[in-house]
Length: 194
Length: 194
DNA sequence: GAGTTCCGGAACGCAACAGTTCTGTTAGTC
DNA sequence: GACTAACAGAACTGTTGCGTTCCGGAACTC
Image 1 (tube, rainbow over the protein chains, first blue to last red):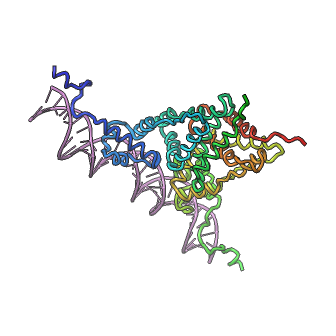
Image 2: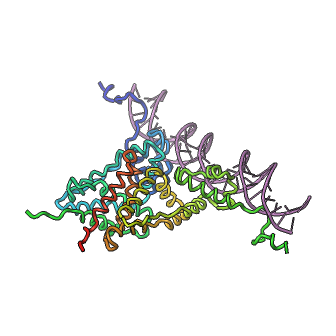
Image 3: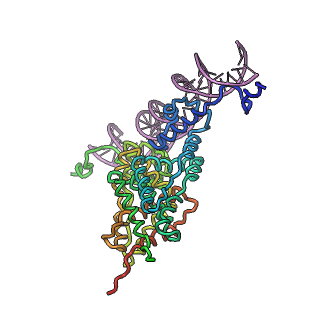
């Protein structure tokens, strides 16, 4: 009857928790993570940006770290385009990384700091850490058996991060992309004649 | 007369400041920087390890950051051996970096965090940041005109750091050294005959 | 309408830690 | 011996920011 249809599935009473609040808080946390880095995020700021109270946060997550871990888990994984020009595809991947290192230099260093401070965040970051899409793109250029696929894939991420951290003045995303892509392309075997 | 010979050059009176205390404090600060990283250093800990009081620290430096900046400036720069086997020399350099990333994974991430938080530390780190010794070693293998010396030099540092941060479980310093060195060695031009 | 839980917002308690001050003592100069 | 400043160590102050609690009000069930 009508009695059952209006009943909540979990038999709870009272005002239901607002899913849009949850989303807004996660989004605000992710934004701040990108903008200021982990070590400068304050829960008060997350709440304000989400248009929420701190109570709404702590009703959902036990600690700031738990909130940030979930926000990290929700971040989209890296992807690579797949066209018939693998060098162009690699250029896209590397260029993305370089621009991100330029524009948001606080994100990755902050994540590293956060990983060392909190196990939940460490797990969340490691769960999302997967460079196989880069490796796959490089493999399409050099062949799946090339002995240096792993170092090269790591290099495409690590070099932009290092430069963004230590030599931000002379950072030039386009030039850096070309440096990295041309190095990898130069390792390609010469085209074999039919 | 005896009056002048006993006088301090700067006309000060009272107990003179103990230079050994200064050294002990700087050394304690540097040690802790290596062990726990910037963001976990407390002045109290520096004082205790140096066998000093906090007063002795703040009599010498206005802030914790100023002390750490000086400790960073006193750190020895990287060097490379120069033998007649440049690949072996490179292996030494890369191996040092890999072992350091393995044993002290908190140092560099901590430095990056600290740079973002304090201008004096940023200046001190950048002042000491010089990879020309790595670049020079690679140039002896590939030739001074090789177009990828800069990326490769950065790679030797950046890849160990990335792996130490994100995949510490599977970190193998010796294997990583070989990966990096063999990649660079594979770029060497074939020996020209007479 | 009664009862419950949510909401934003503000106030609060509490812990960590930078930097200061005090105390008794010591190493120097005059 | 008088004076001054450094010394270690402890106590103290002030700030920052996490997490809690309380408020008046709103959304929902019964």
